[in-house]
Length: 229
Image 1 (tube, rainbow, N blue to C red):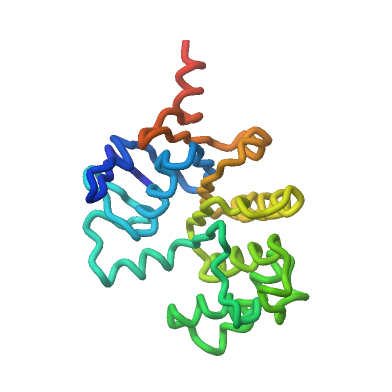
Image 2 (tube, rainbow, N blue to C red; image 1 turned 180 degrees about the vertical axis):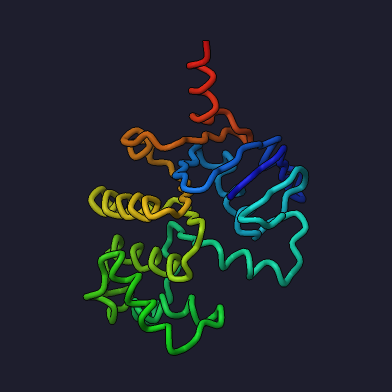
């Protein structure tokens, strides 16, 4: 589903955001991406949804080679991805259902299917009763659930969650995290960038740790090596 092979990312000022990063994520996995601010987590996310291209190495996502994507291929790749951000990025002048519907409208979905698809995902995230509420009328946790519904409405194979609990209190964090686990249990790959090590410690999900642009720990690889005779 996701494969990074010896990936480097340099910025115009000469700073190296990623240095020789190699990992792959298989179908059905839930992966934590951890590390301090500036470690490279956000750069990995931007490469995954083709906001940026690698300076060296190869990035493959859901069958696409990000290095050589043509302009027409970028929206096709992004239809296979759902992306959730820390700051929700909801349209303040649209209701919950209108925010979710917008994600379908921009991809050219059939008009007569939109309402049912929107209600399906709002029900999935537990917000069907607040479908006509505006973002200002929702709590932070509820706003993030709307953002997750928006990310899910196109039935993505991969959900990218960039610090999805960063602006939430402890109770809302638990609720959003459980929702992401449920989504993963349904077969969707989840890659979650987070600073919240308490969440990481609560589970046995795979953890990839970044430091200064390099991959310094991958629980799948390192634990397998430790168990080898």
